[in-house]
Length: 190
Image: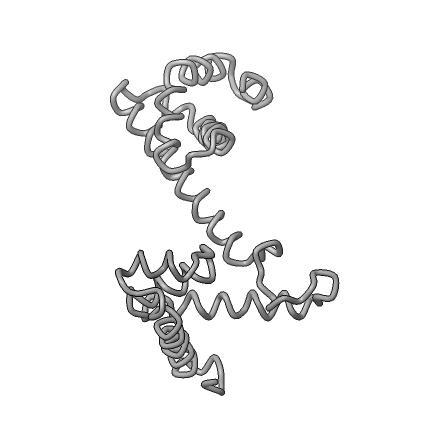
């Protein structure tokens, strides 16, 4: 961190102010970042990114009282963390985790890029209708296809007989397909 401070063109007293500020508020900055992101590497990145933003405002920061400075630093770290979360969400939305894709038993070597893109598109469509599905359907579908629960585990979760799960899943899939067709995502309800 000290290297970054010395690399920035500032007056010597500005550099010393930033170094002192970092030493004094480092734990506050890190704890604020941890409220939003758990990964230690991401927390450190957020603290560093926040410090770079604060360096650009050294003149303003030097004139602040201690309590105002603390609030300003916390707000900067909070905003940096929120921006990081937004960018992570955007990355996740537009990326495809190939390892977790289900191609109905298709061997990985025979999958085409079109298969991967179609599967990613289907997941995007499902995420749009997901809130419209009843809670039980969400539990069934996510339990079966995402979490890999057995019929018995689903029955225990829903408080019903194991034999009822197959029909409940069929109805949940039909309701999901109906929602997709209502939105014009698919033409066929089969």
